[in-house]
Structures are given as C-alpha cells and as structure tokens.
Image 1 (tube, helix red, strand yellow):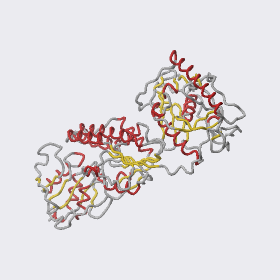
Image 2 (image 1 turned 120 degrees about the vertical axis):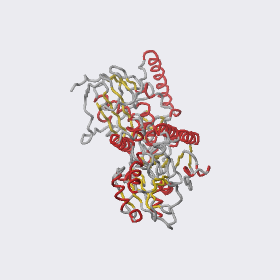
Image 3 (image 1 turned 90 degrees about the vertical axis):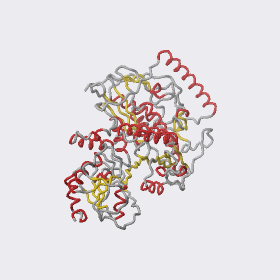
Image 4 (image 1 turned 30 degrees about the vertical axis):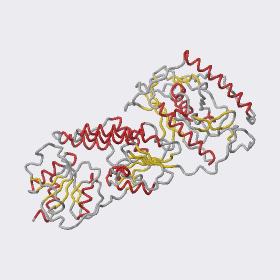
Length: 593
C-alpha cells in the first residue's frame, strides 16, 4: 500500500477565541465581525487572482471502487433545547451534499470546500444551525457544516491526499473528530479545507436516515489508500475545554442568549402521493396528522378526477403540482399504447412532479412517505437524507422488473413487446439504493411485500362489492389484459384454442390485430356465462379485475406476480405457462361439462 507523506498544514491567521473563556459582549462581537470581514475580503481577492477552480460533477461509474469512507451520526446531541438547531444542521448538510455529490477531482487538482459549496446563504437553502464562534455554540445560517468538513478531511487523509489547507477547531467537543486530531473547521470564505489527490477520485456525499456518508471513489484504476479510518470506540477522550451554548452556560446576561424552548415537539411528516389507490388512501388517512403535509400531482377531489381524488379530511397543509401533473397526463395520452414512448413520458412527468412537490420537504420534516414513482428523483436530489422514509410501493422494483423481462425475452425473442419496457441504468441504480435505505415498504401487493421481509407493511386489498347472481356458470374466460406478452396473453390464447373456449378480452389490443385467431372472441356483457378470469402475468401492479371476480364468486387463475394472497377461489400457476393454465381450467366443472 502506498502511503502519503505527512500532510502539509497551511494555517490562515483568523480571529482567535480568548482562552480562558470570557463572556462575549456587543463590542467584542463587533470587533470579531470586523476581523472576519477583513479576512473575507483578503481571501476573496486572493481567490479572484489565483484561487482554485470549481470542479465539475459527473455521473458515477458502476465499476468505481471505494478508496476511503467516513460515516458519522447526524443526531449527536440529545439535549432537547438543541433539537431545533440540530434539525437545521441536518438540513444544511442536505444542501451541501447536493452541491458536492458526484464531484470529480482529477489527480493533482486542488479541491476547495468553499469553491464547491459556495456561500452558505438562506437564499441558497441554508437554515440556522449550530456554529462555533468566540467559544460559544451560536445559531447561524449554514451552521453545522463542520461535520461535513471533518468527514472530508478524514477521507482525504485515508486516500493519501496532499493537504493544502486545514484548520483545527478552537474549542473541542469531547468525543468529536477534533478530540482525535481529525477535524477541519470551515468558515466562509477565509477558513477553508483544501487538498489534492494523487489519482482521479470522485466524491460521494449523501445522508441516509441517521448518517452522513462521505466516500472517495477510484476512477483511475490505481487504488491507493493511506491512513485508515479512525476507530474512536475505546479510545481515551482528552479532558478539554469544550464550547458553551446558550442553554447550558448559565450566563443569563449575555446579549446572545436566546430563550430556552419549552419543547421542540414531534417531527412533522410529509406524504408525497401519486395515483389514488384505495389501500394507500386509507393508510395515509390513518397516518396523517393535523400539522403534517401532503403533496399530490393534482387535487382530484376538487376537480372531480377520481384517479387523484385523495381524501384530504383533516389535512391543513396540502400542496399540488397541477402544471406538472397535467403535463404528464397529456404526455401519456399522446403516447397511447407505444410502450417505450409512454414509459419515457411517465418518467419525465414523474420527475417534474417530484421536483415541484419536493419544496414541501422543509427542515422540520422528519419522516416522509413517498410514492414509488417519485422515489429515485427525490433521492437523487438529496431530499430524503436525514429523514425516515417510507415508500408506497405500487410495482416491481425496476431492477427486478428488468431481470424478469430479460429472462422472458431470451426465452421468447419473437415476442418483441417483452423488450420494449426499459429504463436507464442510472435510474435503476438510484431506485435500488433508495429502496435499500427505506425504513418501511408499504404495499397491498403480496409478492412485493415478500421481497422486503421485516420492513414491509402489507396492506389488505380492498374488495369491491359485486352482485353474485348468475356468476361462474359459462364456458367463457375473461382476460383482463391488455393483450401483451408480459400479461400472459400468449398462454391464454393457447389454452383457449386447446379447450375450445371463448375469450372476453378487457384490455387494449397491443400485440396487433387478429392476435386471438383462431380462438373465438366475445364482448363483455357482465359476469353471466363467465367460467373464470385468467391472468398468467409476468408483471401485474393492480389486480382490480381479479379482485372483482373473486368478490363475485368467479374462479380466478393467476400468478404470484398478480399480488393476491392465497384465498378461496384463487388458483396460482407459473407465469406464461399454457400447460399449467390448461390443466387448471380443465378442473373447472363448467368447462369440463
């Protein structure tokens, strides 16, 4: 393993805190502010003349390997009075990670934390968090970014980078990175963290629900690593003078003192929903609190659109994205039955809606329940980090879907529709990673729930009310459709021809005209003279027709992909298997006789 030479530390002469600590007053604060301004002007001039350039961000390569990694907890202060500033710190880390994630640092290039981040202003999304100033922890816009700079310094040391500029904290919080000499404080713009790698690296910067994760990824093929990540557990913590905060220093006369909040209250929730499934509607209605937020593409209840008619009773904070929502609906209508164009329109529309609804995820939102259609886009934008995420899962994860369709297409290359349902690899990777980090997976689909043991909240399908008169007594079979390979249409056609049955197709004809010939086709006239409903699908999201048939007492022959739990009247067969379908249909008395 190649090791770097000892890091070169170049310190800037910034304002120093008095030691022993003295209570700040307005005069000392004004002097401190004047020194800061002078240093900012000096550093700004130096950067303008010969400062480091801003590095570009690029997509990640699947083959990139991890050189170094830092994982630090987001919530490290259990003091109730500090909860609000801790929430602010996490929001600031979200904003900063969005600016850093994907940054490519070529070998020998100079990385500057502030050049990449830019000024921490409220107009750029930063909020008040904790910042160390004059020996005190004080609220400041952008406060808390030192957790990020600490992590960057740690992974830079591990990766053998040449440290160009690094500043230690003037006060040390026991147990923090500063207590072990692995800290790097930053203050706009005169206290910076700068380093240069010996190889091309890419910066990975994300938050999961509880952790800030910083990684350096190798893009040069020459893996190098230097100092190992620090193991803090079990190490002695030096007795150091730590910073004070307004709620523990007992200096009631200090001009900076802020009132102690009585309670920070429970974290608010946000629900970002899409299509109105009755199962999801009931779940959200039960979970929605009066102070929680709900975002939906179109306010269907107000406009009379059942597809988006979510029950908003008791919800006081409702946000919609009508322009993006109607744009998606129009695009899908124009795409009609064209699989690739329709899928592209759906993804582009969902991305626009996610971008619009993402604005309700403010710093005080501690938990998010999000529709699967928005998940990868919100995750890519760093809006889900530091929160407990639950996903309303309505279909197969894209990675599983692709694998299933690829196997089927390899077995039946003549069925071209099996290969027209694809999405970009980067989108699959984002959804996969986001689903891995989700705390809960919420779905009524039995197959989907089984994919996430221990995390799935398996909802019951809501059964419709259907008349039971004259049902299940004929020789016709209903195929809910649409007529396409992944829904099992080829198996249904083979079975109908073999048994001499009439088919009642309910979906669109997507495999071309005359697909069912020489089988006979009948029109839907209700449940009379229907022997069974069959759907040997590879993929099925909402088995509404199957639920209706079961409620009417009609036998149902389906696959596990249809998402129904075992129950009376339901027979489960392998997908797209005409022999198994013929065997199961032959068991029905009305067809045999």
